[in-house]
Length: 360
Ligand SMILES: Cc1ncc(COP(=O)(O)O)c(C=O)c1O
Image (tube, rainbow, N blue to C red; front, side):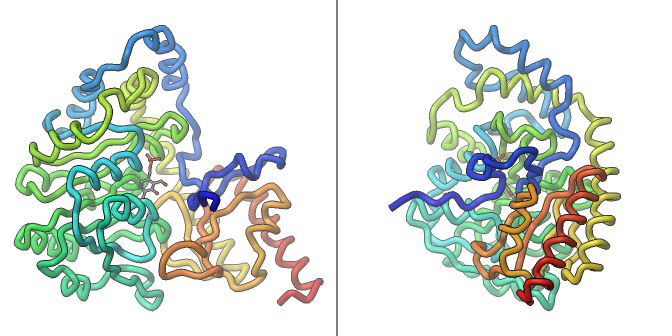
């Protein structure tokens, strides 16, 4: 049996298309910053040595940037890699996951035989978790993941509710992972990030990455933060010592200086998200109010929307393979205005063709 890849960003399978616009992976629309490109090129000479196994320079820089102790940080080969190491280090028996959410939580947990309970997000609640999630935090659960903002919905969890969830996890000694990989694109991210709760809570782990914020998915650089020093030690013991390459460490150091670039991206995303959402709504799609750099929508016709858009050079993410969703749901990244205009035009054409061909 062939292995199935389930995520967005598969430009290789779709590579027959010239000028393919990838709306299926949610990365910073401004692309890799110049300074990061330069740092990668400069790092080539350093590739003749093994990378620093403790990512010392990067750790110091990130600790200053986030105002957290350097001892709280564990770097790895992308945020996804951290998930697999966390699963190995913690070996949870039973986890609670939201549905729909990012697929690799389940993949990583299943790889160590962990059982999964789901909290089903409901469309009538705009896919936002409600207080009934607290009832599913029972003593048999030992691991919970909250993706905030959630992938694919782009929704933030209510801050008071998240605070209650964290408190209940502490009481029941449940490890809670909050994935903030898309938090940097949220307008008021400091109001929602739980980083400041780390020192007072050893059960809390926060996942972040350079991937989306600095448009570097090809380089692989992610990390988690926790005050649990035993867990940090086990994370190091559960994998190789050189899991962050020399170019990735150098790129990370350069990226952290790019504050103006991130600010510019946030402004662009807020504006273009409004543009795309309004256009999608005009074309009959239902949207749910994303706070992130992507938009989740429901469109019942045409059923082969992804294939039709691909023919026009636009790769989108069908959400059919997310638990608790079906083939009527899609996710698109927020990109720059010129390409967004072309995207909406292509969507209109696809819909008109479907009408002419009587597909509706
Ligand atoms: C919510 C979320 N967390 C983590 C990841 C993995 O990020 P990385 O590319 O840094 O491994 C993704 C990738 O799509 C994601 O959507």
